[in-house]
Image (cartoon, rainbow, N blue to C red):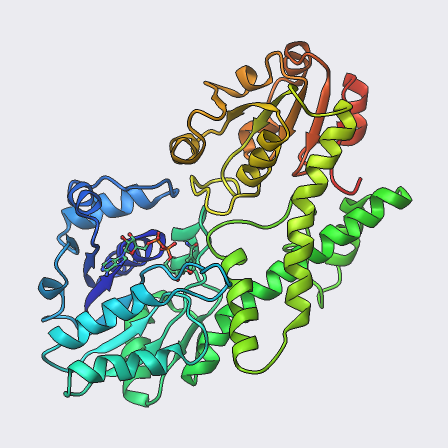
Amino acid sequence: MKIAIIGTGYVGLVSGACLAEIGHNVICVDLDCEKIKNLKKGTVPFYEPGLDKLVKKNIKNKKLFFETDLTKALPQSEIIFIAVGTPAMRNGEANLSYVEKVAEEIGRNLKKYAVVAIKSTVPPKTCEKIKNLVSKYYDGQFDLVSNPEFLREGSAVEDFMKPDRIIIGAQNEKAKNIMRELYSPLNALIYTTRLESSEMIKYASNAFLATKISFINEIANVCEEIGADVGEISKGMGLDPRIGKEFLKAGIGYGGSCFPKDVRALRHSSGVNGYDFCLLKSVIKVNNRQRQLTVKKAKKLLGGLKNKIIGVWGLAFKANTDDIRESAAVEIIKMFLKNGVKVKVYDPIAMANAKKELSGKVVFCEDLYEAADKSDLLFIATDWDEFKKTDLLKVKKLLSEPKIIDGRNIFSPSEMKEIGFEYWSVGR
Ligand SMILES: NC(=O)c1ccc[n+]([C@@H]2O[C@H](COP(=O)([O-])OP(=O)(O)OC[C@H]3O[C@@H](n4cnc5c(N)ncnc54)[C@H](O)[C@@H]3O)[C@@H](O)[C@H]2O)c1
């Protein structure tokens, strides 16, 4: 099938490369000329395992193309995906201006029937509005479909190729069948719904996962008071299939480009529609408090923060990505800086992105040992495998004082004690 994808970011590029891989002809479009110029040469603008290979292979096979001009991509396309960003505004509302701009351009340039599929995460009822917007400029036939994306950064290619489910919200069988044909090579479970349900499934899923994280973080905080081990509790709870073991890892809170904004957007959109989603208010509060508690811990462990040196391992919002959007690590570093701390940082992949935000404010180190060297405290903020394999005796020698706050619980408290660290983790 012939596919256009408007917006070539994490979601657009992964979707484009994977759809090309399963046999479709894909044109990815983006406003960012530099990005498209590089992609035409096979250079992927961000770190995502396996994506580089897939992009290069499908460019070579003439299955995957890149354009800055949407009008070049539309004429042939049977399905046009909208995959631009929907960032949060100050009040939590999802900013739909990028989606609306693309919809208007599609309306102005559509010449024949196509399915317009919204992959961006949008609040319920948005698809209906976007349909009206396209219709304002195009009076021919088209169908609007909601097809939210569930890939996770760090395992995005794998997630796209082997999805647990594909959700398709549509208003008629014709559009549903076109989408079924698109995904048929994946042999995946396809669940079709009405438009608003599909939009809501995405928000509800992310909000539920964020709730699980805030829940286990609250349990962890209670564990610290009563001397229980949250790791044991997660395991014990996770053995119950009604609960499941995923997203029950205590830490410094959720971050990234999706959970924080989607939880806020669902809360906002519920409010606009007359319902106060009070549970989500607490989920957000707990998540913010988790960062503040980390700073408090550091203050307690160091007996004050002013002029102390803290080495930080990890900047990405989670392992295996270079994405630092709403990263808990970066937010905590900013709190350290406000408290007069000198911060030295290291991340295996996310340093370039972090430099855009923290340049001149922190010391960027060549490796994890340099970040530990002469630091009064080591703070582990991201659970990269590289950190788990480190030479801890060497780290102990390098630190001014053998103090570690592990925000991701990557080491065993008893082993750390044996080595001689003053080791504080979360809920253990
Ligand atoms: N990143 C994720 O893990 C993830 C997962 C699932 C869903 N989503 C959702 O998918 C959407 C996209 O997220 P992302 O992380 O890929 O965003 P992103 O910021 O990485 O990419 C968006 C791209 O759209 C481009 N763009 C903006 N306006 C455009 C226009 N008018 N024409 C062409 N291109 C335009 C931008 O230049 C950018 O490259 C969001 O709604 C997000 O919530 C993201």
